[in-house]
Image 1 (spheres, one colour):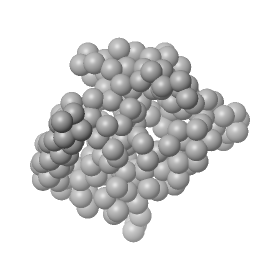
Image 2 (cartoon, one colour):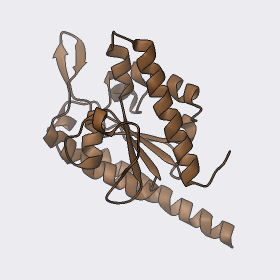
Image 3 (cartoon, helix red, strand yellow):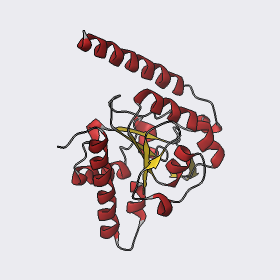
Length: 213
């Protein structure tokens, strides 16, 4: 009976998530939908202990329709592995669901989302968090942190510890993996610190779940 109930709840959650995702695919809450190839919604298990929130899709994500599959995503995968965190057991999404860019010839160059675009897309993050209810939500970069906290914050001030979110759960803040692709000084040290952040986040998720493994 318990197993049957759990299956029903899981099926309901999946149906609800699929409904929200389908709505997001038709999103016109801001002007970015006019220029992007498609909405890039989050992906991962709906019972994930950790939700990672990035900034926005990049060029490759926009074309593929999946988050974190470009160069920054590949570095993110490597860092998660080094930290002992299984990406397949996490939910990964972005604060802004459409790719914002400027054209330079045939190239599409990333352009940072502004406050209005972040606010317009915050509704989707709230829907994802309400459905998944992750014990830990991790902001990768300042844009994601602004989305989660509803205000401008700095990574330096919040990094390295948990922060209570208004609607439940903890938020942790660290850099976006794209930062590690751009940084020129002490790249190895910056990468090591990022991996340490992810390791601590993974350990905290286990502690909140009562998992001593």
